[in-house]
Length: 234
Image 1 (cartoon, rainbow, N blue to C red):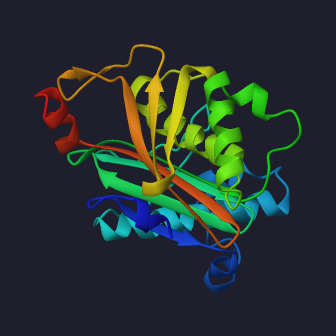
Image 2 (cartoon, rainbow, N blue to C red):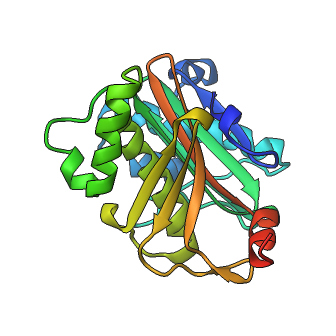
């Protein structure tokens, strides 16, 4: 599912449940260092944490990278082996990881959400007025998509791509999302000045989305060739 919205050069592995852990045997899904991170978490959280790391290691293996612990930093962002960029996500019924070599890609961010409305009162806190306007308009025109949840997922993917580039948090109001329903795409305009990427200031991201089988998945990538073309005005 997620591979359909990722470009060539980005490797992904996904799972729709935690049965892979049963196949690997007790404790086989995590390195000891990883197990300590979720030692006090609920069983469901432990399973999701383990399965998404199994996905990550399988994706890394396809790049020829040996299995290593994938530990979160103080902000919860996964720490990848040298020369690798990646992103992970999990929600009810879905876990996925996407990785690429840093020689090919500047940034990756993926997110998955259940395809259902946000809890009451959440939309105003995560959106700008113009975003709420298109959520209403698209909801009336294409009610088969829960646009408010898609907006949230798109912002999560943007944040996951932004943080490794800058080491800074990005508030919800600092990224304005515009949807292209016909192409299953979106763009994100950044309010704060971004770093210089590929010889040019980063002003935003482009991403893709997919809704299927009760799930929303979104992905943001910044391939190096794209950044080079942008820096030359192409």
